[in-house]
Amino acid sequence: MGKGDETRHAILTSALDLSSEVGLQGLTFGVLAKLTGMSKSGLYAHFDSKEHLQCQVLDSAASRFVDVVLAPALKRPRGLPRLQVLFEHWLDWETNEFSGGCVFMAAATEFDDRAGVVRDRLVSHLDDMLGAIARGARIAVAEGHFRSDLDDEQFAYELWGVLLSFHHYGRLLGRPKAHARARRAFEHLLETSRPEIPS
Image: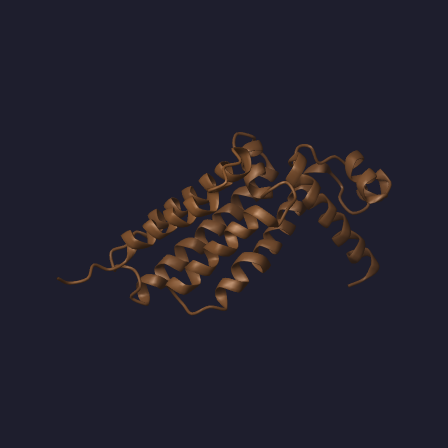
C-alpha cells in the first residue's frame, strides 16, 4: 500500500467513526479536517465532493462488515451453524464496532427519502446484507436444517426486523435486555424455520 493509499485509508477510518456519531450528513470536510489534522484541500485531493466521501465511507463500512460479520460465518459449517455465527457477529457489529453505532442504521434514517447517489449506494449495500441472510437460509434448506418450503426472503425480512429492533432497543432506548431479547427472537425464528418432526 502506497503512501497515498495509506493516507486515504486513515481518512476513511476516521470518517467512519465520525459518521457513526454525527451521521453521513454531519460528515463535513471541515469537521474531518480538524479530526485528521489535514487541510480541506488535502481532503479534496482524495475525495472530490461530499457525496464522493459519503459513498466511500459506505464502501469502507461494507468492507469492514465483510471482515467482521460475514467472513467468520463463512468459516463455519454450511447451514444453521453459519447463520448462528452470522447473527452473533452481527450483534457485536451493532454494539461494539463503532463508537456511535452502526453506520448503515444511521444512514438509513438519513437517506430513506433522499434521492441521489449516496442513497443508491446505501441501498446497494443493504441489499447485499439482506441477500447474505437469504442465501444463508437457502443453504440451511439445502442442508436439511430448515424446512423445504421456507420462504428465504421472508426469513431475511424477519431477521432484519430482529436486528433493527435490537439496534433501537439497545442503543436508542438503552434497555439492558436487548441482547437477550434479540437472541430469544432469533431462536424463535429458527424454531419456526426448522422441519417438522414426524409424530
